[in-house]
Length: 485
Image (cartoon, rainbow, N blue to C red):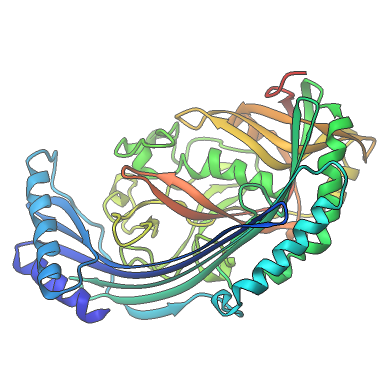
């Protein structure tokens, strides 16, 4: 890997770039799926290539290739410089980078059981056991189980002298039980919707989640939703389950703090941001008990946003985003750090693969726990609704007005969960909503959830992010806003 990167780097410098970095990346992926007792998907792929990013004539240029011959490496480096010079014709100012130290290092992410060492037949056998348990419940019309494994090996080389190799394994697993009755579809997912749970670890994640053991309850809830009462419309106190809080963070905190959206240099897929620069250290984003960090460091946990260095060679960091309710930080790059008065990037530049240029991306954007279990939050609520597992989401292109639906809910009366509710939903304005938060669960219910499918950029990049959260309570929220009665 180093020889390939060095050849491309040397050519980029010889062609006249003032700065250059090279990423050589090998990726192996395996995707498995079952559906109603049958194997639905067995797919494995490998990718190996190199991307060159340069500054020439004061502008960025990027090019990539999987032709890793001497001629191929020389050509891709020359192309990156050519693109930079062409881009300089439209530049408003020269690119300037915040300083960064030279690092020579290597890091391997946590992985106790290599998922690629588990035979495909063994994975499918487990998945079909889950499928059987789901369809054992009368009324389940569709049972789906999936497992996704990804191994990434990356070498980074820069003209500043950094040489960094990182290896990590990511595992994702989950299942969905769907029930169709009358003219309505209800579904329940475990351990989360949209693919399940994803983390930077090995096959041990599959073992930890006890898929077979949870299947009967999830299937029974999917069927029971058809006879449950419709979520009432009105203004109510709500408690959100941990995974739903994670998605709330993703959409109404994570995206708006991406500084390229704020500065207007990126708007694809999720729009821009209401968090203009004048709001930094001024906006009361949330109630005083809310503390949010962007933490890519391995000590934060095995999130999809966990690494040792970002794709600019900047070390992983823990950055305060909301501190005692006050908005205090953005996600930055070496180029954008100066816009907010920072002397250094906080390490948020990442690319989907060797053929994509790094962008500012969420790392692990997490709500810090406070105290108490979910049961404690419920016991402390006289009249409200508990909502669990995301079903749908919608938010405007400034990340300010939102509406979310969840798979299931329960009414809370005098500190107890009572009747099940179908089609629960809630909506609001980002800052009003977070300022209504008056209780956050403790470490015992805090989970670092993985979002594997965050899209951004053009051409589009799909990136994994992490969101740590405990269940949380929000007062006087508009509920029942998404679905008809």
